[in-house]
Length: 118
Image 1 (tube, one colour):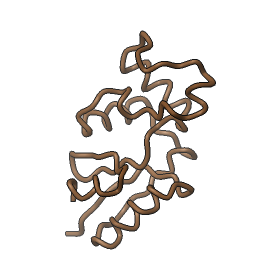
Image 2 (cartoon, helix red, strand yellow):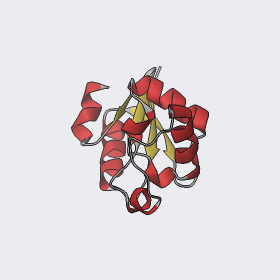
Image 3 (cartoon, helix red, strand yellow):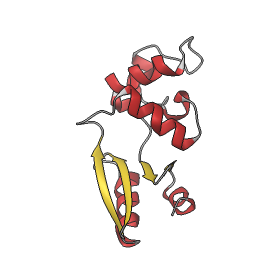
Image 4 (cartoon, helix red, strand yellow):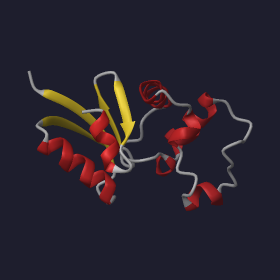
């Protein structure tokens, strides 16, 4: 049985490319999710956070220009579901890369974080 992984990936991001390369080198069969082209649903994001053992705000790129332009703050009065909806509509705000192996996930930034999952 082959090792399988899923990566939420932006091919223009060097960290994403490095994580994908590491998975391939370790013999994983990788399903790439180009999340900017095919944004994950709010439900998928909730599942990701469950696997990451984190809350919605932990997967937000708060330093992203779009985050600032939208006037958002991490301590805004939104529950996780509202954040998931927002992230699904604006996937550029999602941290990358996120790698899922089995029932666990990690934000592979820096790429060395991925080794704890493998």
